[in-house]
Image (cartoon, rainbow, N blue to C red; front, side):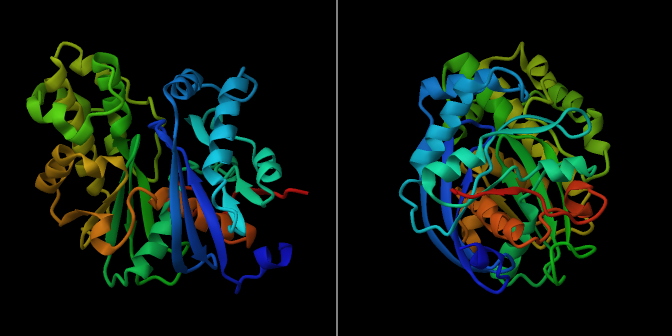
Length: 369
């Protein structure tokens, strides 16, 4: 197996996992790749967190190694073992872990999870800790999906620059020039976090209505956007900052102050507009207007947010399903793809994606022996 992992011409079937800042559960997706090309897609799965597990993880947000995280670690390990159990055919596992805190120019970045424990439980080699090496070398450590977005652009045979937008807890944008030979090539990629996306909206509806998220944008659809709050939100200096740049889940806590006096529907509508406006501002940093904007992540299921994006952006906006990709599993697939690149010593980030000084291969490998 060790030889196959390192053999740069040998394709592998990999199970990639993702547990995002929305704290909904664990996505697992099988992908076949040689670390360069997408060669096939396999089965996928999802293991939801229970309400009790979600409370445990929410209580751990913002904490760092050395804090008391035993209960949260148990949740992450158990959930991933259960999610990965049906994927015994995988040659390799890409394990992202659960992001608890992200301060790339402060304390670093913290994804909770022990790859060695997962490898022992699964009997499979596990690639994990994808972000630390990039941060240690001066990068933001995020976003990391852009190298996979480059492979996706090649897979759909894009001939002109396109962009991928992930609307998860935080929004992140990848501008891709598929005419380049490799993702680490100069000018191939520009990537950065646009701003808050689903996380503050999820927190709002949980706090006010006890709901996990604004299902179908129903609450926002009933409300009216408070333009004054939106204008104050867009004065935040982050939007003018030149990318690459990244955010922690809770970096825009000011959003709650701006909507505190609004009723539930107006607050939801205004927060949804904030997420869309952050993307609009982000598009201003693209080297050129992309041919189209392909949207992945949970936000693409919110028609209010999608309509706001379409109205604000000067290119077609569509979910990634329009080109045959799976928007629910794209990030899990990304960490499967990146796992092969780590195993083969290929770069996983570059100056255009995280601001690191030179292309770097992050991650570490734990084997069951």
